[in-house]
Length: 310
Ligand code: SF4
Image 1 (tube, rainbow, N blue to C red):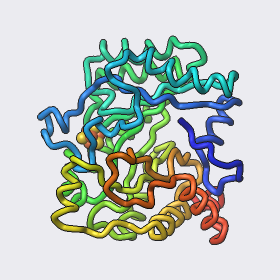
Image 2 (tube, helix red, strand yellow):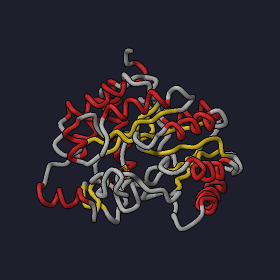
Image 3 (cartoon, rainbow, N blue to C red):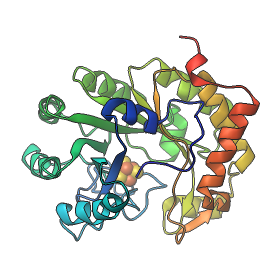
Image 4 (tube, protein in one colour):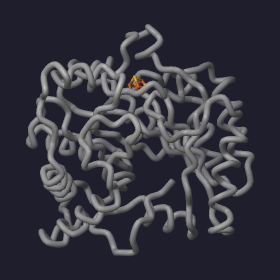
């Protein structure tokens, strides 16, 4: 669901603002688990997955995969509808790699959600190596019928980091996927993680500098967190690599917004870990306080994304 934590004007191009401009009303994303898998977990690329990935395929707040998609969708929508009867919805295929299946299966799952009342679009999270020609051609067709967001995990541009976190594809694959998707009318979002093991601030800023040059439409900033029962938890236990403090994270995000191309929509500014499984950092527990602190720091530094020069 969208962040709606205060009514302060934002110093970055927020998703809330973008969707209000686009649809003229309150728009909610509804997180779904369509029971796909991932080539980085099923053995096609590896069995281990990205080292931070949870059992749910990084979809801890997606619906229950044992429920059908309509049930998942309606359960969340019913609660929102009581408060915002005029709202419209985007079905968000979040868990695992949501283009990693035959097109016939993608079509059934996506279009089932598109048929639901007041659904104005789809957001589909996937990997750059899960977009073959057949899938791209179907996504092109879909983008002519509805507002389509494709969210691609990048995490970092640095090869040594991506090797350490077992990303399983390289930057070239990511770059090529962005250009292929942008041949269609698709809103492409890059997902990055700040605070990956052994990355310094300059490296995190370089990741944003790189993305500024690609024709992406949106970005998601995440803070690295460590969940129980993940390979990252084992690495943390063994190497005790430093995690960013809250103030370091705020500083880095502010500097990233200070260089972000003005027309890139900020879909997210922090992470939402499952608190039952969170090992560290504990400061992520209070998301709203963190978002407020980022707002305050942007004001203090007089940073405003729309003033950035390009
Ligand atoms: S690509 Fe996504 S689902 Fe696959 S292992 Fe990495 S984080 Fe998990």
